[in-house]
Image 1: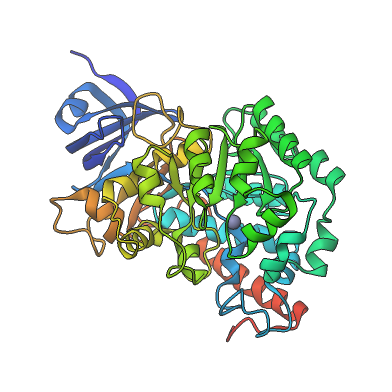
Image 2: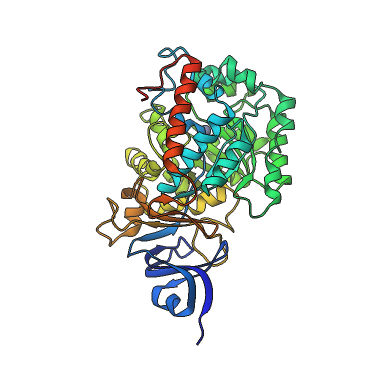
Length: 464
Ligand SMILES: [Zn+2]
């Protein structure tokens, strides 16, 4: 029998497919043709079936679908070390909002490139940026140069400010001057990034995001929901992030935030709400009845200092069928590689443990659903895009190899990746980018952060 041609055959792996049966093939193989997965199956069968241009030997290590970070303010990664605590507004001469507003197009480009390279090293192949980039074209160029995927939305769409009284670090004159709190601006920019979706091969696509956390009027909420629905993309917004936000919202609107969203017709299966840290019982019911998705940001949950006061509900929501994905929010004190471990600890601290397989679902297929790309991404199945990660067999945390689900969710951290394919192309090989000079990006981003800090009159740390 003659063999069929394929471009890349990944063989000799512990293949976690994340398909509906959660099939694990050991040893397994994945055949790739063009940008898509051609076949997934037992190693011996695929070796017999395919004649590959290139064979990648996983050496017995874990092979898995690229992780998806469902909520990552990508440029916030460069706030590392500049603020010890973004909420401590008395500690520094500027607010976190000033740092956000103080970026140049170049700052955003190098910050995005750096964070994207870092994500590849942690097994991520896509992130959803929630509308906090000003220079989306420069950042998209950086993402494409590195070879990742991303979803972008227009920056900071809002038309109310009252809830910022509960989150003063997130409001400043400089930020509001750059992105005014203005309904006409917000509504006119809802579809600003959707032009990217005309190219089905585009690595950076557009969707609709509004800032949320009570900063949107009913008119803006409904316009955003309609825009997302009409353009077949998801709507994402923050809600129930910080203590006090819900009280202010109720005082203005005489109804809890999620209940209001549901009444307005904004909360449905096309809507992805980020945080859901402090919901009342009526809001819990609204989430369940509406079919909306949630993005859980467990590291932010810890950072907010609400772990003793907020009732932990994410595991319960997941069990009840709410689709929950994971997002790093801002990678200030971590990398996205720690997301599943943080979620594991949050669930343990909340006395409602989650199985590692649930964490992997949140980081893969549920992330793809949050992006509205479930038919394309999130699992290793024939026909899907070839976004595939090969872990290193020599990485710390790789053994004993008897339970790859546990290892992948909890012990294989940042830097444990050997090779990454995105859209069928090898973009990281043997732990190195095939596309960009990583050290050049690292030096550029360090200098960019120092220059930004100097412009703002703050210390960025002991930069050489
Ligand atoms: Zn956020």
